[in-house]
Length: 229
Image 1: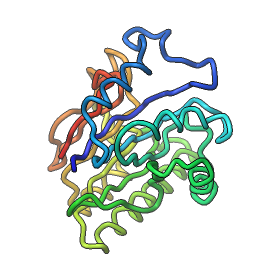
Image 2 (image 1 turned 180 degrees about the horizontal axis):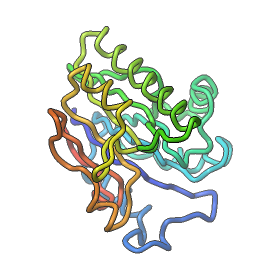
Image 3 (image 1 turned 180 degrees about the vertical axis):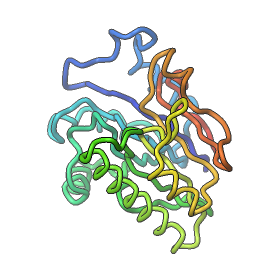
Image 4 (image 1 turned 135 degrees about the horizontal axis):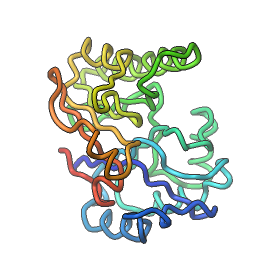
C-alpha cells in the first residue's frame, strides 16, 4: 500500500481547453494514464492537490471523473483555483455516489488515514494579503487547514499536508498557512499550481524551517505520480 501524489491534471475530456497547446504538455492525458497504470496498484492511494478538471459544472466533469475513477488506486482530491465545478461537499459526494465513482474522495475540512498518517489539506491562496478580499480568503483557508490537521491529530495520526497553492514561492511566503503548519509541527508539504520553466525554477523544493516542501504539478513531475511513502 503505497502513497503517491500528483497535482494539476487539467483534464478537459468534455471541453476544448486541452493543455496540449502548451509546450511540454503534448499528449498529457495519455501520458498520465500510461504512467499512472505503470506505477500505481489498486491498493495504493494517490492524492491530487487541485486543478483536476476544466469543467464548469459537475455535469460537465463526468467524463473527467470517469477517467480518474478508472485509474488504479484510491484517489483523494482537493480544490484548485481552476476547479470551477467544485461545490458543497454534500453535492460532490452525492455526485460521486450517483455515478459510481467510489474510488474518489473529497478532501475538505477533513482527513483520510494512510497507515499512521493523516492526509490533510486545503486549496490555499495567493501569497498576498494586501487586499481585504484576499486577506479574508487567506484566513478562511488557514482555518480549513487547521480543521483538517486537527481532525487527523484527534484520530491519533501524524498529519501530512497537501495544498494547491504554494505556501512558499521564491522569496514570497504565505504567513497564514505557514503559521498553522509550524504550530502543528508539520514535517512535509506537497503543493501544485506552478507551471513552466520559470515557475519551476522559482518553486521551493526542499527543507525550510523544519518543513520539507515539494512541487508536484503534473508537468513538473513529468506526468507521473510521485511515490512519497
